[in-house]
Amino acid sequence: MRNALALALVMLATIVPARVDAFDDIRKGFLLGGSTGLGVQGYSADHPNDSGSLTSAALATGIRLGWGLDPKTELYLFNGGLTSFAFYFIPIPYTSSVTGLGFRRYFSGSTSRVFASVGAGLGSSSAFVTMGSGSGLGLMGNVGWEYAKHWSVELEGTYANLAPVPPFDYPNATIKSATTIALKISGTAY
Image (tube, rainbow, N blue to C red):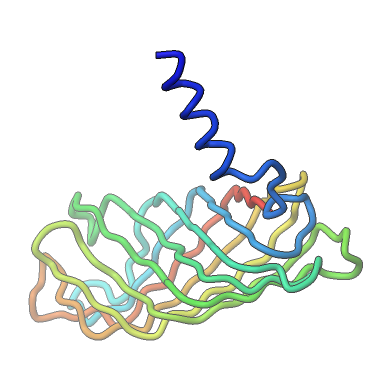
């Protein structure tokens, strides 16, 4: 048992470097982040009763993986979306998200805590049950404030121009676009 533990420690020491430069508290180099919060979704549809109903509160999540080009600029892959638990007031989970390439810029000096981000990629919407899904051009934008090192508050908006998605309760109608607004707490390792 003791030899197995010693062997495991030696193997671990050879695999894991003694000093990890990936997370050195400078906004430059590798970064990994995640976020969660609350938001709302809006959608436009050809529905006989309402053409753009706003859903109730939704769970917002996001992840990003990228590179800090310098202490003020980041380029990253991201996925951000919302999942609400009602669609046209029917209690089924409905998700809208955007996955793509994003760009973040911190204002003024390298120690600035205020930033803005933009991104573009694939927007999608789907329902948990039989409704199906749609996808198209997706756009993302957010503003935020880094209130502590590695932690920020962000206000994020997304838009997805979708291929028609037939709603669950009215198959002849189609969803044309989905818009989300979310307030999130974000953590980033850099």
